[in-house]
Length: 189
Image (cartoon, rainbow, N blue to C red):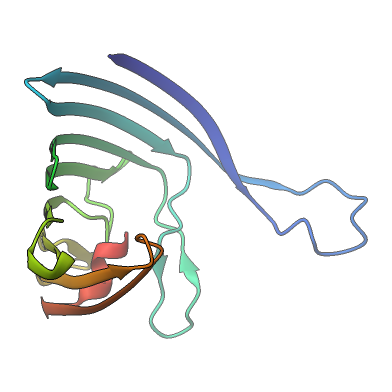
């Protein structure tokens, strides 16, 4: 399977301000394109995604003093992501790797706080004694530039769960855990 997508978007002033009869001001146009190639080989789904996003204005950084966004100027974000997924009758395994390069289009400097590399692996087992099910997840986010010469810390997270479904899988009872190193909020980007 081969799929290509293209889109245009923009950030605007909040259109809910005022009586609703005026047009919002166009602030920051953005264009994105993505190519995804996916193939099933011996019951294993392998996917490759290439993406590119051009932003006329990067508003991602938050000022620590005011809590407001800071304009970092125009940027170009390129990403490559590879994933492998295999489903079994008793569980599944999923592994992904994403590498990104987010740079300022005029200076070539890296965009602060943009993730650069993320590894992720997820596994589940659904046929354990006493109808128990387990799930595990490992994620690693490489340290990323924070701006002004500072670099963040890498983030490592291990998540897991054990659960027991009741009433024909409609109501599970379980326990979850997270073991993390670094600033774990970084992985939500």
